[in-house]
Image (tube, rainbow, N blue to C red; front, side):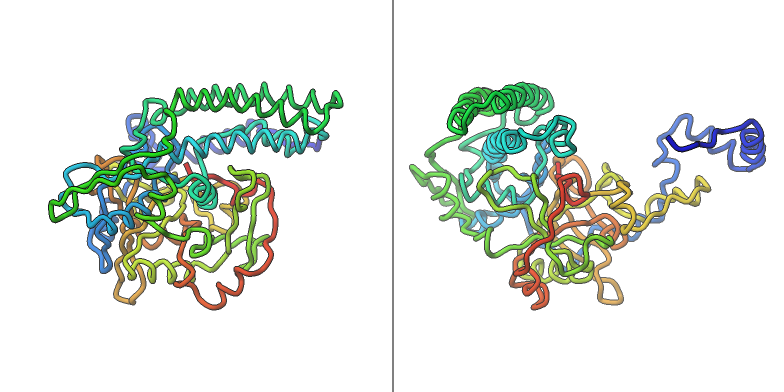
Length: 454
């Protein structure tokens, strides 16, 4: 181990003297003894730039509530798709008497089941590596969780379709997932030990496959008990804005999707990221190995672009009337009860006298920031220079925060903390479309872009 320098008495004495001589040290110490740091550094005048008014404002359905679960990516993606279903059904967005949602529980069930299979397949594929191999250790420590990515959502929808929430309602476990996830991960690690022992003992591939399938039944049973059994067929009933009642009988999840939504998620959309880091040049594709849900599904893939290109594509899609799924770091600069994401609301540097600033270029590789939450952009306002100065955000934290569950994000926050947006290819430039055809550069799942939204 390299020589390290310790803290000496003179250094401590100098620090103490300098701190006590600072005229702000005592009042700040008193304030922070009784108040949250964000309350102390809050800049009230910063709210002026976050008014809830927008040049482009898509009228969307009421905010949803993921409750105590990490399913934001599912909620956000389904919130985009339900607007297509609402158009098909001619739903009145202002005064619909009941909630009009697609079943988040249904998608979460199949995502969990597929993730379990992906985990076990990964353990089998890496069974010849030692337990302290970094990839094996990462997979075992990570287990499975609620989080996910856009491509993982596409994998589930393509394989299993979607259903209205009335066909598979929420349960206590689907809304409170922590304990269930803990049990699943304990069982997964038990299963991993058994599978690795079987491989080490010389069992053939057919025997290993049979052993894994027996394990999968236990997981399927647990998910059915926690989430309920996913429907094979169901009836869909709704009332349109003219007061007409409709009942569509004996639908399957796939026929419902084709009839009421019909988006070609796999071919018409692409996932853009803004990662201005040395290892990821702009206009190059990025894929994350060993990070997925459906074993035979599409890989997690992004196109890295400058922020201005991302914003331009988002604005075009919003102007067409379609919301945008996006991923960001909501642990930074947010007033959640007010529903504000703004870099002008908190003055840590000026109030505390300490410089906390870090550019995106370094915040990502040095693990200070990463995507951790997915939401939906439903509007944008343009400043005097014609560029976006604030965005309207549909969140999935109930209608009790912000403006009935809708938030505002200012331009500075967008540039610093938005990392991903999924946009239709028709709104991308020729340069972006050409770059999408190139082979991606591969990264391990612990890369900052391997972070899952939850």
